[in-house]
Image (cartoon, rainbow, N blue to C red; front, side):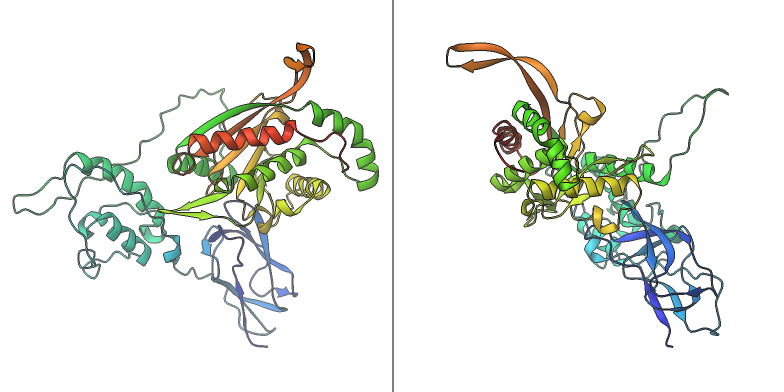
Length: 441
């Protein structure tokens, strides 16, 4: 048989790379078609890559711990008897031009930065490798080669990566916005590299336990910080009357379980209301790409789910607007079970356009959620509590016991202003409060 290349598969529109965590087969091992060869981890989920053909593992092209781009060859599978190559050969990571994240231009500059052209960033006179992506960012940000040489690289063999550039640019702008030093011959002197502030030193004693973050916790920490740095967060709050929904669910939950073999929770009912509100306000269902706003056609609702390890993952209900309440319930329960049993596939957590997180499941009244990038909004729903509430009756105002729940809507103030963000969360509450207690499920 001809040799077959095992390719790093596509794992969702927002996933461009994966880390090889463990080889399940060694060089020389026999492999069946569809048998798992290697375990991989993205910034969202762990998965396995199956073989596309039967044969023998001839060569591994990457080591455990290497980061591989989607579409790259990670192993060679050949016929039995072919010479096997035991040592993995790492190929350099290629950064795609599609990964460029345009950086917002500074509105005010005290001194104009020098114009940087392709000539200014000519790298033929340096031994350091710069990818087309890094050079493109340097051109856009006016970073000459002399300054580029001073940026510490965290990539393979000390290469400067996109992340290094985006971490460096904000600190560089702080320096150049105040002064641009010039030498006696008139050449611009590159500003000194400002290192990222280090974490404060934590004092420990012999009685303290030191726990190293696992891979997922490190990724969550990175994404949360990155989201705060990307999006100016604003949060609007509304308290919704859930009495009709609580009474309806209590009335139908046993029949629902018998007929559908599924437990109905409040989550699919809330998601149904959010989907209706998105149809009313489609500019909540967007993403930002530089100076462009991407208006999403599909309504894919992410539901933040706590894992048994304490970590967090966000499986996605695709085309939620095309599902009725039974369909939403089945989707919610299926994804929650997959998450708890570590059975989520890469596609299960890809493509979300809006996220909901249920902080009420932990007894919390409300929360200030962090936006799940590249989305622009997220809603936290709190615990449902009985409260004395003033209600209007034909004979006048009265105090009654009602089931109330807070909705916390966090949104990206770059593209969602207070009017839209506030109207949206109010509309979700209106749909919840107007729930038809006589409806069929």
